Length: 112
Image (tube, helix red, strand yellow):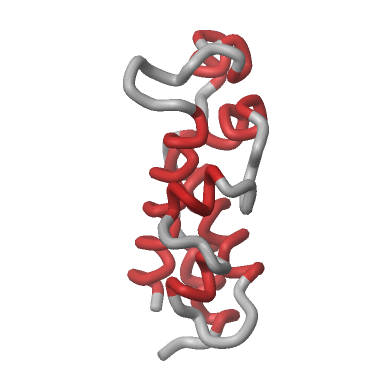
């Protein structure tokens, strides 16, 4: 198993092209930064059952505008009025954040 520093190095070297993948990578680095001790999903979730509970429980961004800025392109920000409008017809911003956090954890697992 790699050290936390080695995993961070792997993630930082990963090339990203889209706003979404840049946001997911930033989420992964933030998650790693917050883990104390062994790098496990349970430690990353910090007491939450899953990424949706983590997101809705206020463990990450709580404002729609912050989530939108972290994950959207400039045109996406404009389309959603900086996060004031819902991201799509089937998700809230907290749902989108939960999906991004899930993908961030997947990135961490791959880097391990």
